[in-house]
Structure formats: C-alpha cells, structure tokens
Amino acid sequence: MDFLLIFLACSLCIWAEVHAVPIISETENKTTINWKNDVVEDPKGRNFWTNPAQRWPKGRIPYVLSSEYSAADVKIIMDAMHEWSSKTCVRFTPKTPSDTSYVEITPNDGTSSYCYCHVGRRGGKQLMKMFGECMRPAAMIHEFGHLIGFNHEHQRPDRSDYITVHFGNIDPAFHFAFDQFDRREVDALKMPYDFNSVMQYPFFAFAKKYDKKRPSMTLKDGSIDAIFRETEQLSQIDILKTQLYFNNCR
Ligand SMILES: [Zn+2]
View 1 (spheres, rainbow, N blue to C red):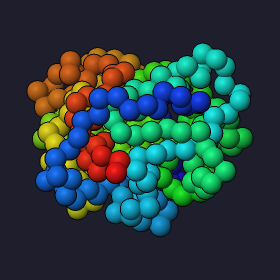
View 2 (cartoon, rainbow, N blue to C red):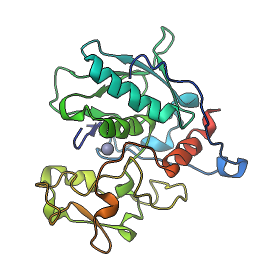
View 3 (cartoon, rainbow, N blue to C red):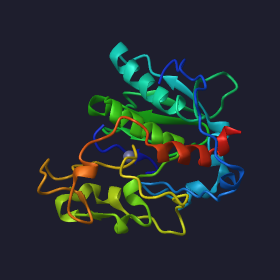
C-alpha cells in the first residue's frame, strides 16, 4: 500500500488566484528538501521524496472531481483548496487534456472502505478518496496537505523532543500512523516543531476511545492543550514550508 489512510476524515477550483503569497529568500530556496511517504511505506521501499517527479511541477495540481459529491461536499472540498491556494503558491486547476498526471477526488473507488490520499505526485492518475467522516473542513485541509506532499508533523525525526506517543492508548491497527521518520529520510526544513500545523494530529487521533486521560499523544509535560483539536487554518510554518518545497512554484 502506498497510500495514506485518513484518521478521521476540489472542484472547480476557481479560487486558484494568487493572493498574498510569502516568498522565500534565495538562501532558503537552496535548502535541500527531502520528503518521505508518511504513513504507509512504498512497496518497493523507495523514498518518494528524493525523487523530483513526486513534486507537482510549479505547484500546479490538476484535478478531476467526482460528480457524486453533493453541493455541500463540493463546498468543503473547494474551501480546503482555497485555504491552500490563497495562502501559498500551490494551484489546483481542473484537468485539461494535456494533463497526464492528476488527482481524481472521489467518494467511491469501488474497493477500499477507507478514505485515503497518496502523498505528493505519483504520475498518471491518482485517487484521493474522501467520503463520510472525512468530509470535514479540517480533515479535507489535512488531506490536501498530503496531496501537496506533506508528511505528518508528529512523525518528524525530532518529534520525541516535543511529544510523547502513547502506543498503549492507540488502536494497534494504526500504530503505523505514528512511526517516526529517520533523519536521513525526512528534512523538517530547519523549521521548529509546529503544534499548530494542519499536519499535526490532535490528541485523540486513532485513540482506542476519545478520552482526555488516555490520549494517543501528549506534549512532553503530559499536557494536551496544544493539540486539543484539529485546525482548519494553515499555520505560518505550513505556509513557509510549502513555499520552500515548491521553490515558490517557479
Ligand atoms: Zn494525515
């Protein structure tokens, strides 16, 4: 499986206009950026993120949106796209005949019972399955982060300096979602740990039950306040990382 399961939970992305997009300095642009598939390993053990082909060229992501979505669903999808495209250089554009690599966003792939999203660009057609509990603003924004190329904040190589994962409180079937990446495989772009990232799970993610006393994660001091809920807005670091990763989409 080289796709990403969603722990809880586009369209005529006409909102793809450029707004105030931060520009990374020339020095920062030269930062080496290596990403890795986050939750599920590639079957060949390949590191997605050292392959430039896994990066959407110039931050442009062609998409096809299933006609099965309701108007309310479409709004959630479009709003999530807008959150990314209005604050970063990433653009979602309806697929054109010349787009051979694109994402199809669908509530039904005919096979799996999970929502999922490939991390970054795969080449050719790739699916992003979103339905049911996944149709929430926070989950949608998070999943578009994966589509763009982001891995989870809580899987950073240095995560143990900031959070403690309580595997005993987590459904064993999803322990993999808390694997920690190796420093040789993932580059956090020298950014500080970001509890406010849309790629940070909340304390109850994949917990056996929603219980503040049995969280899947806490901060090092045992608190959960900083990861109490999902966020529906990109953090400043989310924005800067996106700009770095795509070299300002040039
Ligand atoms: Zn995720």
